Every structure is written in C-alpha cells, then in structure tokens.
Image (tube, rainbow, N blue to C red; front, side, top):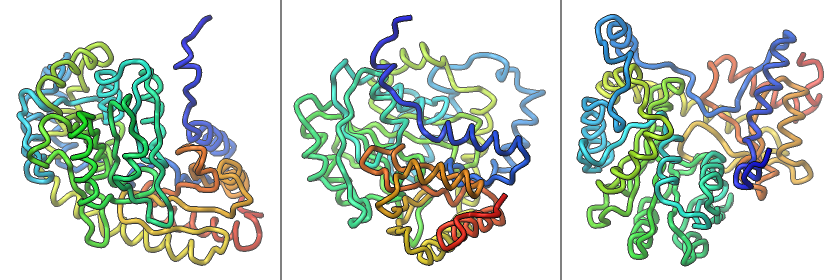
Length: 397
C-alpha cells in the first residue's frame, strides 16, 4: 500500500508505547503508577453528572447530531465565560465553535489555515500533538527554542528568529505543555502585535488556563482589542473539569475563519457529543468554586515534588508556575527516553521522556503531579527517590 510521506514521517507520541507497557505490567499483577499523562486526579462536578443523568431520559437531543458549531446554550455559556475570565468578546453565534476536545480544535485550525509547505512557529519544547497535526496537514514546524535557565519563557526575539515569509501561524501554549511555564503577559502582547503586523495567525492554546500557582495568572491574547481577527483562541474543558473522556473543547476566531472551519469540522467529526455538551453547560455554571477547590491540593503536590527532586542530585527542576507537570532535567549521560523506560522497568512508575517534546530535550522527563491520588503520588515519589538515591529501584516489584 502506498501511503503519503506526511503520514509515514509523523511519529506517534512515545507515551503510547509506555502506556502499553504499563498495561502489560498491570496485567501481570505488578503495582504500577502513572505520572505520565497530564490528566487531573478529580472527576467532573457532581452538578454536571446529575444533569447528564437527567438528560439521558428527558432530552431527546442526546441521540442525534447537533449543530456543527455546538448547541446554542453551550456557545452562549462559553461566551460568558470568555468575557468574564479571559476578557475576550466573542459572538456565540458566529465566533465560537465547540469541538470534540481541543486537540480537534487545533487540527481544525491547521487544516483551515495551511497550504502544503506553509510554516508554523512553535515554542520548543512543544506539545507533541501540535507537531503531529502540523505535519499531517502538510505544514512544516519551525521551533522557537526556550531555555531552562530562563524558566522556559518565550520571547519575541525567539519568535522573530523562527518566522519567515512562509510562516502562516505562531502557536503559543500558556501555561505550557510540557514545561508548566506561564508566559509573561507583556511578552505575549509583543508577540501578538508582531503577528498581527505581519498578518500571521496567532494560535493561543489555553487548555491549562486555570492552573496557575504562586499568584500567577494567565493571559489571553484574544483580549487585546485592536488585533482584529489575527488571534485564534483554543480552549478545553478536559483539564479544568476533570472530564478528558467527554471530549469538549472549543475554538474562538473571526467570523469568516469560523465559517470556513465548520467545513473541516463537518468533514472530520460533524459535532461534539451532544450529551457532553449538555454536561459542559452545567459545568461552566460552577466553574469558579470548582476550579478553586483543587488548586491548593495541586500546589501542595508541586511543592512536595520540588522537595523530592531537590533531594536527588542527578535530577534538576526549575520550578514553574502552571499546568500539572514538571519538566525535569536528568544527568546528561542518560537519554530521556532510556531513562523513562528504565524507570518504568525497575520501579513500575511511568514518566514521559523529554524526546517526546523535541529531539533537543532527550535529557529531560515530564512528571505529572496531577494524574493520581495523593497517596499514589507520594508512593511514586518514594520510588523515584529510592531509584536515584541508592538501590536503583531494586525490590519495588
């Protein structure tokens, strides 16, 4: 079978193979812990579950297709949330599109934007699904490297160096995956104006917008009033409400862009699941209390992780102020991929290799501090300390 190079050259995320190996170990009866996927330890609001349970018997819409752009009440709820939390004014009828997760929103944006050979500048280390989507659309990724010494902050100078006359979009993710960095507001504004001046689309992925610590708040460049339609905002309810399996994300963009993007949405998914959209409306109604209720626990876990890593000389972490994970540098003699596999094999504990986020980051691993219960998280940190500080994980099984 002859397959296109854009598909053959795209590499699956390493976490898939690691998850498969972890599942094999679990099937063998091993006590495995995942600090891999960046999923929260909590589930959706109880109000949402109650509303969905009622809708199962009372709302006939859940068994049918809905509007490609999303049910009207969810788009209205998102418009209100965007205005109140992000400072973004968006017409729910023409500028908001609900998608089956924010990964789908990003893919829809790239398919709508890119011609073959167009370039997209993204901060490195980068979220691997962004890289995959750009390549699958026939685009070319151009990295704008950030530095550990600088807290993985993205600067206008980094973006300028990564743009050419073929650049169609600049992607920023803040809080960042995989580093957890929350980008400086003034620098984001400068990057947004740079993009607008050159008619380059700025794609702002804000999946972790509610996960900021030490008083740090996130910033939506879509709130800058004079940039016209040059900013595309992508959001997700997956992490905010602990509902990753419900597949609800959204895109906010100019009216004409959304009109064209709906063609892509219809061809790839038609619409997000109606039952999930009904639940999302209710979840957005309790967003303030729900998000505040989990931040203190996550911040405490981050501090515990910092203390553990400080006790391990061969690991180094520049603490960042957002998301659900740490991007940790290992001893330079070890490849990040080799380290992640060896730690899984010796301790039954999963981390994500840094190579998943770009070849330059092979000496790093990403550790999620939000993905398991508190006791399992503490057990995982104990295994990590034992592995690096003496026995190499002997006896864990």
